[in-house]
Image (cartoon, rainbow, N blue to C red):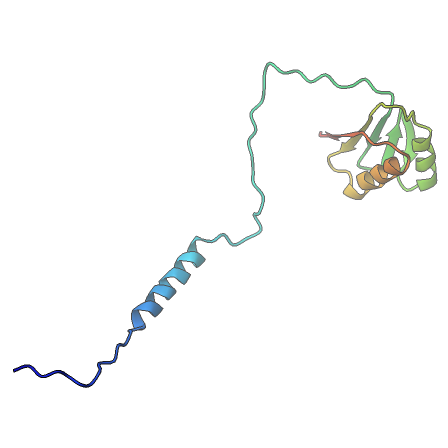
Amino acid sequence: MKFLNTEKSSFSVEITPLIDIVFLLVIFFVVTSKVGDSQFLSLDLPESESFQSIPNQSFNEISIISDGSVYINDQLININNTEELQNAIFLLNNTNESIILNADATAIHAWVIKIMDILGKNGFNEVQIRTIEK
C-alpha cells in the first residue's frame, strides 16, 4: 500500500550554473566590444567620371593661408587685424551671390570660424567652404 507523503517537498533552484552563464556573457561582451578612440567611420566614396563640377564664378572670394594671411578679393589682410578684416568683409557685395571661403588644409580652425562669424554678422548666408591642399 502506498502512503501519501504529508510533508511538502521544497523546490529549490541551483544558481551555480546561472552564475557561470552570467560570467560567460560578461566575458563575451568585453572581448567583442571595441575599446578605443576610433569612433569615426572611414568611407571610400566612389568617384564619377561623367560628372564635372562647374564652380560658381564669384567676385566674393576669401582665402585663408596657413601663415595667418587672408586674401579677400586679392587684397591681403592679416588675420589678427580684426577691424580691417571686418571692414573688408563689410565692403563685399552682399547680393544673392555666395561667398567662397578657401582655407589652407594646415590653417588653424579658429580662423575659419572667426571669418564665418564675421560673414554671418554681415548678412552673408550662403558660404561655400573649400579646402586648399598642397
